[in-house]
Length: 149
Image 1 (cartoon, rainbow, N blue to C red):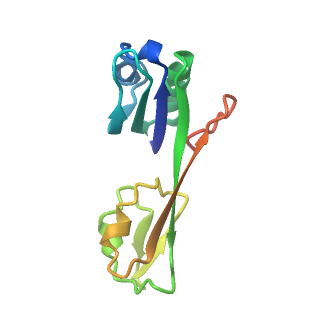
Image 2: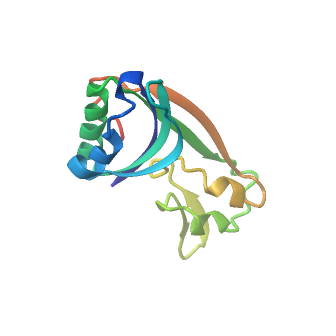
Image 3: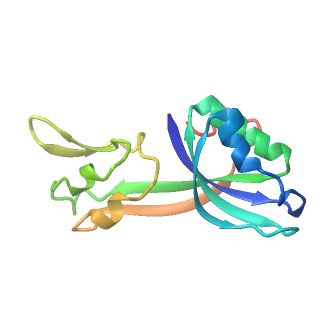
């Protein structure tokens, strides 16, 4: 299962279409609406967290694009400042994907950026602010088969 955050830009012609519902029904993709500004007959914007099997999510994104929806992946990059981190482990209990974990028997707190989804839950719980987030968005290429790697 992969979890990624996307910015969706809907053309005004599609404001009355139940597209997000179809992600669940047709593509078995879970979603969490983080922010939405969609009104009838106006262009709309939605920030959506999608979770599912990579191929299903990619097919769902292609479905949205077929309606003229512009899909941008919100690329959150989480970094850990190892000089600030004092290995308290507070972040390991909040990380939903196990990107922050305690390696036993040495009890060292490790960070695997490849597992990180960019949810940024670790940032506010770090008592010394060793976890940092930077955000950016990039339009996904139509031919990008590894869009949610």
